[in-house]
Length: 203
Image (cartoon, rainbow, N blue to C red; front, top):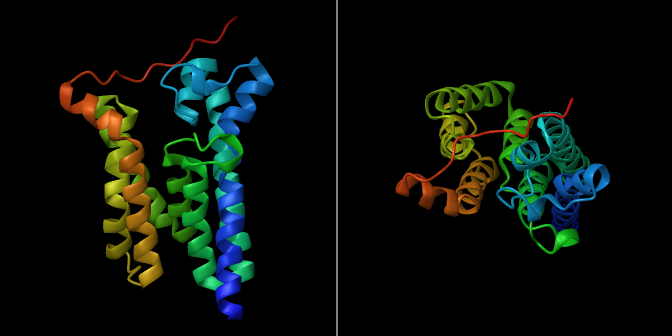
């Protein structure tokens, strides 16, 4: 019973931290806008960069990464290795469906990347290689993100992460990011997905 409660607490903490949508918080703080009403409508670093500029996008990316690391660290303190993994998955869920922001969140790419980093720097490095190679060829963040999420559980297995919760985390991360990119996938198939462009900073 105690173990179950610890894992439940790890999930709850991960979900609540994930529900802090820094894309929305920072866009309202610096521009008085809700970034979800502009650009692609997504509450993520990429859309923040499009709407407000690259530095705001990078700041969003940083805070999304920190909340993921914090969630997994606290999950480990509370529930051990399984709590660590469960908190990571819960953080991704909260990021995509934040309870504090009408369940309208981001697509989970930054959270998924930091989950990979928390598991293994080798996994993170491989995911970065996939992302930048695909982006260099096609110049579409959505396609690069989808390629990364598909590669996540594959690289996990190759690197020796064969445990149930480890593989579950990788598969859940992949499935979640693909689901959140469903409209992008339709546009990619139709050939109408735009290339990535950012808002030019005002001088």
